[in-house]
Image 1 (cartoon, helix red, strand yellow):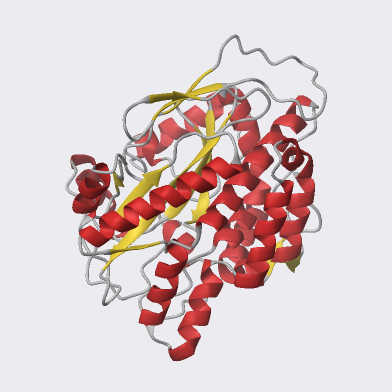
Image 2: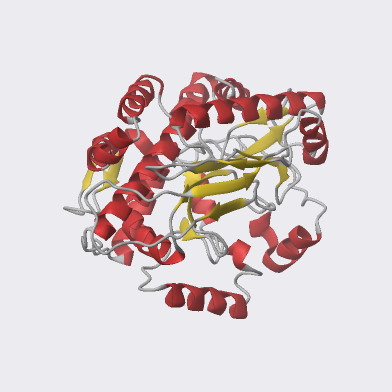
Length: 407
């Protein structure tokens, strides 16, 4: 979230977008990224965009579940296994970054490998790795990581920098920033549903918050957080970012925390609305659906389909509803009636919407299997509440999340 980002660089050779394309055709891209070991990896995709994921985790005391400030030690142990972990704003957090991959199977393997190595590094440092979007326990403090930029953020923004917030960010390659802006506009109606899907912060400070994603409520206090406005051009987007910087609402472009945004440097789009999911399977499902949504948006753009109109107030209401209810409640149908519908039903409607893209990349069956597991096991918020209701003991919640982190 706040750490120095993995090198998401994309080299596009002779990229020209013709005015007319047949449906479900995607340009060839060549992502170039540095792996955690420093080697250059080049993946050539002939038919669909590559993607990658950043996951943020809490580091907690194995006995009490309280956050512990050991991220430097954890990063040092992980480096011994060739994995570079990013330090986050607070020293109770760590971030993993996958390599850029072409398929959901490769992504699942990467996520599993990185969680395992990070968990082993945490154990060597006397801590436990926890995939939770906020600490379930009542922490005494969140020490800021010893970093000049982090200290500047903490000094500038005060208490909102001291919460230990953990999310998941999905990067998908797109051919240009212009297209990234247009894709951003088309993804806005789906952002609340991605939040409901991954909600994983129901229990916070030894209590059920009444929300499936309390993280999203806390996170909204940052001046550049939440859904972005609709932008008609790159110039309009860049102008808004300049305004935020002049106002002091962000220190730099890296602090533009909108839930979907184009990269300022590379032709990628980043979706960052999610709580960190409880399991690797849920993270892989999220990333797979986001990539298919990006592919569908690119296809609609090529075919001249208009972007769906969306009231900012309706979007705000949909965010609140998804944060409140999560996956086992209701969500707002922003593309049709603007009425509440069962979130699981709206999720199936999304899968149907992006099914051509899922089938093109061979992910349709994977998504249906992942949804069946969600129906059986629930997502992170549902796991947290089941554990909490047993005895109202936060240790049960921590234990449940720790097991799910490596499940």
